[in-house]
Amino acid sequence: MTTEEEDKVVVFWDVVECPLPDDLEPSEVSENIESALDRQGYLPCNVSIRVYGKKNHEFKDEFLLANIMFVPAGDANARYNRMVKDIDKWALDNDESDLMVISRVNSKFATYLADWKAKDLYIFGAEPEKAPGKCSNCKVTSLDELFTQQWVWESLSLGGDPITRA
Image (cartoon, rainbow, N blue to C red):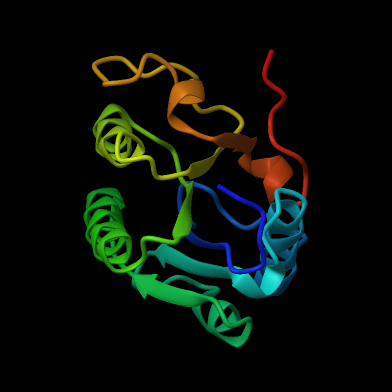
């Protein structure tokens, strides 16, 4: 990643695994994510967010009003499959963009993302506070190896900084 103006990042966010905080609207969380990425060198105008949720998600209209693409994808497996399909399409079409995944990352998802990381893709990640930090049966031994920068979802949703690594 370079920090030039043309750098872009696409955010793939599972809103069921990493829900909106009770006191924030989708537009506020979007601005907070953009602010956190701005401090990493990405201009807010170069951040695109896609939200994956249940088909009858209660905030669907609010996401759309905040210029956030809402993808109705169903249960956890359907959301994962749709997100993977969309990441594949995006990555093949966008060689000058970076990726952020906001979701609980299980071993299957971590292994999938590790394949993209091996192709020198910058991957930013955010997981819920109570998500496990290690991944068994993965190509990576910890999520620290997978993510270029990693956030706790509850902090990122408020515009917080990434986790400091030793």
